[in-house]
Amino acid sequence: MSIKRIQIAQKLWHKLWENYISRVNYAQVYQQMITAAGGCVANDHIAFRSLRLTVENQNLGIEHLAEIAAALGYLPAGEYYFPSSHLYARHYRHPQQDEFDLPKLFISELIVDELPDEIAQLIYQTVASGLSIDALTFPSNIDALSESEIEQFVNQLATIFTRPWQPPRKSTVEIVNNVTQYGAWVLLHGYAVNHFTGYVNRQNTPQYPDIETTAKALSERGVPMKAEIEGSPCSGLRQTATHAVKEMVTVLDDTSGELINLPWTYAYYEIAERNLIANDAGEKVLFEGFLDAQAKNLFEMTRK
Image 1: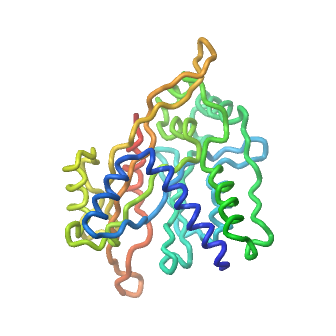
Image 2: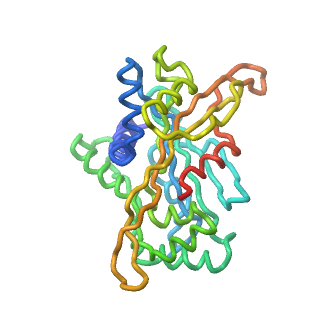
């Protein structure tokens, strides 16, 4: 794998982190808390949401973001089904993850065709409004790019992780939210980061040796936390999260046709602890995947 592609991945995730942390102050509290204890802030995975829907021959689902993941050297590593929520997800891992400290990617999509026709039509009409998605093109001379050219390209890539359609109507968001809060979230935020994930295993501070002490310390600092930790102490993956922050989002007023502000959930900050499990050969290995039931519960953290 080209070192320049790895540099682009590192810089892109850092740029998205800087934007995310400016909006999700709970992540700032975590960062300050771990750093003050002499520990390390590492990211286990980044999560994104999307819509399994094709508009003007453009796939708006996992495959859209998977193009970027593949171009950066990431490979599919697991898939997950959530029938009751009409969701499907896939996670990606970079083969040099450990060497270059690259996070996993967890990309999910709402299967729009499974929704009631009225809801599916509202979603389709909204995303088709002013949709603007440029084809992803990596420079052919990527190994010869200068530092400034890499920065410029990363800035270009970062614009993909926004909302590529016009603001939705207020009534559309509210109607869709009654059926799928995930769908309403994507109409408002598009491909913006849904969450970053503090990796407990890498904190490397005796003050916060596990997920319990970390979650408790965040709560003591005034961070609203999920009531429980997903996963038992002996399971491969244990997760919890802050509540989602609320922001003023822009929507179209149905009566006046003007843009107005509406309070809505944006992102939360997750923390995860990974443990050893027995593989098929009976050897103890670190669990690198995700668990369907836990992921389903965490999807609900953005419910308004």
